[in-house]
View (cartoon, one colour):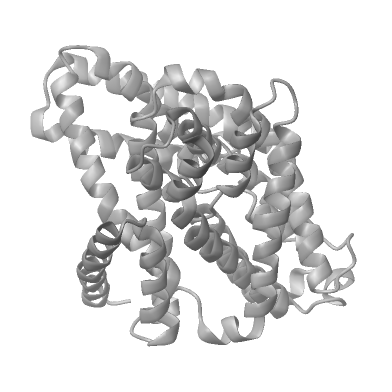
Length: 417
């Protein structure tokens, strides 16, 4: 892809996105649904951006954008509030997530008339079991939703990415598309390795900024450090350790450490304020790119072939699987209030991580169709497996962002005020 073409696309989207975001602000709704619809219009509907180009650019801006949004969201997350909701977060990220995965898989298999033992449905469930901080953090940063509720959902979305990735790796192994030898150890290394890496990164950052004031250079130092942590966990660690560390979790832990430790030191308060302002502005830019390119990345033929089935899968995941998972998980003592459980059940948008996983699966299957066992392809050919998972994931992301981002404020006001 030509550099000039990429710059042209990005410039166009920044300009259009600015007007869209301003319109959303004026009419009092979140900008994410409008940005996603804009991507659909300029991509598959009008054809101004090729889906192939959009997918290529999204794979880059989605990762960069999520790093920045995680850094900002965790930076602003207060530890004193997080401690109060940690038990709920753990229940949602384990029991709730696994139940949601299983029920989503069963729904997918039912819709496509597959045997319930067939792994294809559970691949879809694994891809879509993780909620999205790139959607939730911007929503709650502009609202007066109870911090306890907001932090619960933000923390759930930050910490469930490793489990979603490992669950996807587990299910892909049944198709021959994953080489994981020990998935349990994979998860331990991803999650706890990411925690350790983020803590070390936060300590190093604290040591560096304690030596001198960085002024206007504190922002590139902070963002660069977050990107370096992600790169080490996702790319460097697998070569040396044989296992990856969750770069996304490392970034979140580093942001949490900086926001709750470094900002409390009088010497660093000015620098930290500058970094927060810069990252907040930068997150607005990345949010525009993430959701417009996400909308533009789906092709019209795939939508026509699998759109209806994908929409049914999305409805089942969001309004059956997620609520059941949440209600069972939060029924374990200490039990959350009924209103909180309803809000948690109806506020779990999907986004960047499911989109990246679905795109990866689509590419791998299309490039290696012969690797999938006949016992699976006898029910669904490889091309249909790839297309159905991609479109169902997109429909889940699209519907969850459109609906749950739009009703986040009204639902909170109805339940808690």
